[in-house]
Length: 359
Ligand SMILES: *Cc1c(COP(=O)(O)O)cnc(C)c1O
Image 1 (spheres, protein in one colour):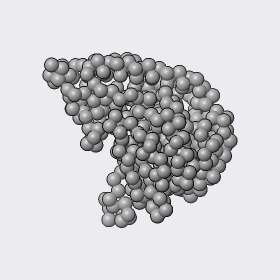
Image 2: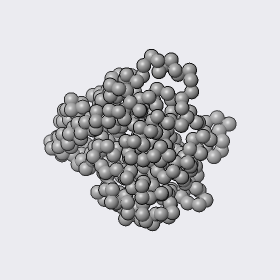
Image 3: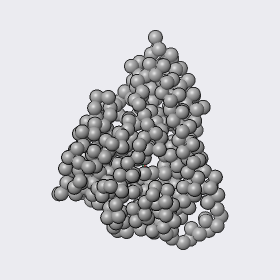
Image 4: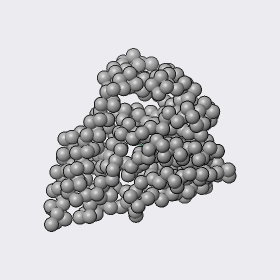
């Protein structure tokens, strides 16, 4: 820290992203990326011509992409907000909808780590609501909370999802507060709350192209909400960085929506590979939480979470381990191709044998 850093950030604890190592080639099952490339139309969209056009600023309204998303989801362009990854939208939402003086925020105690970082960044009081003993989010705990509510659905890193009905109960019981549903993983078999935006003006649904649309490196996210909420987000965007989605990513986003089936087919493949991984790890004695996401969260009574993470890394397989006390025996394992998952299972089996944990 320099002596110039604003005092209000002196104790800020930043988010720690998953490792993106460059030292060797790993089987990368640690940051929930897609193992599949973007669709053919996306690859074609990044043409020489589009690269030449980079001398020009992108469309700050993201009009073409909003039109494609509006049509796909059955909304108007004015209900869509587009930004540089969904983290950007979460950031803007904490800025816009959590007021240190008027109301704090509530989110699950075990969830996406960025929620706490944003709360700290903006000095917002955060109520962290414990999970149930089976690691699920209990909808009842979020009724009438009197705060902005932020829930990842499916939750991360557990992968467990709430139903659309449960989300609706939460939204309906908090009419004077925003309920933000972070649907980063919804395409892998959970129920979306998007349709409820037609009915509730306090619901904001946040989505990303990073997981189910194979575009983590493009940085693209969007939100669907009432026109007034989208206006609020635009107010923040135009007060910080109006050109926050670059030209190439906008083209990629439009092209991806033209080949929606390509992505949904890959999601079904991921679901099948998730079932394979769940069964194989269960057979090895693991407890695997019921996931609706492109990862599983698993622990073994035979080997500690951190030890398994380190042993896998030594064998060229990266998974994500969190040191938080209540989940330190778990690892979060991204679902990749079937070959990758077979390599993972074989490595786990070998580790259990080599460490004598298999006796
Ligand atoms: C990956 C993830 C995001 C961030 O997505 P980007 O669009 O890449 O910024 C947001 N929320 C959750 C729960 C995630 O897991």
